[in-house]
Amino acid sequence: MKTSILALAAMATALTGPAFADKLDDIISSGTLRCAVVLDFPPMGSRDANNTPVGFDVDYCNDLAAALGVTAEIVETPFPERIPALMSGRVDVGVASTSDTLERAKTVGMSIPYFAFEMAVTSNDKAGIKSFDDMKGKTVGATAGTFEAIALEKQVKEWGAGEFRPYQTQADVFLALSQGQIDATVSTSTVAQANVKTGNFPGITVVGKAPFDTDYVALFTNREEYGLLNYLNLFVNQQVRTGRYAELYEKWVGGDLPDLTAAGVYR
Amino acid sequence: MFNYTFHWHQALRALPQMLDGALVTLQIALLSMAIGLACAITLTLMRLSGNRLLGGLAQSWVEIARNTPALFQIYMAHFGLGSFGIHLSPYTALLAGIAFNNAGYLAENFRGALKAIPDTQTRAGRSLGMSSLQAFRLIVLPQMLRVAFLPMTNQMVWAILMTSLGVTVGMNTDLAGVTQELNARSFRTFEFFAIAAVIYYLIAKAVTLAARLIAWRMFRY
Image (cartoon, rainbow over all chains, first blue to last red; front, top):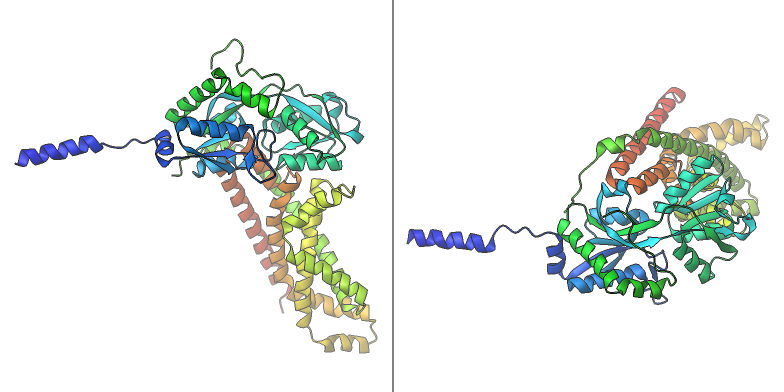
């Protein structure tokens, strides 16, 4: 009798077992994937006339949720709040055009690149800026915390002339540019074209490319969530393989599809 | 839930940069206080003048300064004026916004302080042959500043904390601006914000203590 009770207890322990549910399990069992998306960053993320989130990143999050078999929840996070949102457990994954710098990878886990940006210079028509080098000595600005802001500030310091101003949102940058508070900005070319096209910011023109490195952006989640990171890497790979990446690019951006691989090196 | 390993070593390496930012913060707060004080005394005089236009102007300044968020005031100084073609740099816009706010609150402090000074004092001064401005300057003002001194230190602390709103108008040299930038670069949000909070606390505490010391020196009977 005693042995059979012990055996039963042992079996029960073996069946229920110590649960090592990781984040991937948590997402699947909760039925909801919460994505951090930046919604003042068209065409990657913005709101339509009905205030519904739309954009490349929004679609990407929906695709990811569909692959996981859960519902997507878009959590709006301005650029500086992406990481606090992840760390405080308000979101599961960042689909937020996040540049995969080594400095940041000390804090969060980055997937392989899912998108790549080229940088463009947009200037106020009155400033007389026709190229990247004309920005020397001028007042320039960009969205605080972005790849291009970090690169532009470094450039201004190298030039040793002019002034750099970081604004909290992309909309503020273009507002300041349109008002002439700053003479030029460097932003991703997609964002520059989308903002000039809206007509909300008169008197500004995209004048050319900025010679910064290609800005590869990655999905991110907690650094130690290897299960989820593996899944994200495969998901990005599949998006490209199945042609969905090209489809979304055509839908939101258009033009030449950026290559997501760096030649001559493995990831 | 809270899954985060602190990297204090990396964050503390940026301490000199943050302390430089703290100096800028203190500088803006002090300047905004000086400008705010001058404006507040002018506003008080305008309200005492009995002239309806001047009084009305002063009253609207105080109403707007006290009843709208400081964030809005600073944002308007930069983007609001910007849309009329008046371009203030982030530094000036932040300074102007805080000084505007300070002036409004200080003017209200002064109004309260004035109530504590009996009218008879002004009348006594006038009967000694002082002009009304002289009586205000030599008799009422010193007493008013004395009564309003501690509320003024409150406003000073508030001014220091308000400087953190500068990030919304592109300020990147003050403590909040430097912190935001360090955070954007490395994503070590909690370390940098914790250090910034400690620095803000220490500045505010130092200002309060200094003010107490000054009050003890100046207002001894």
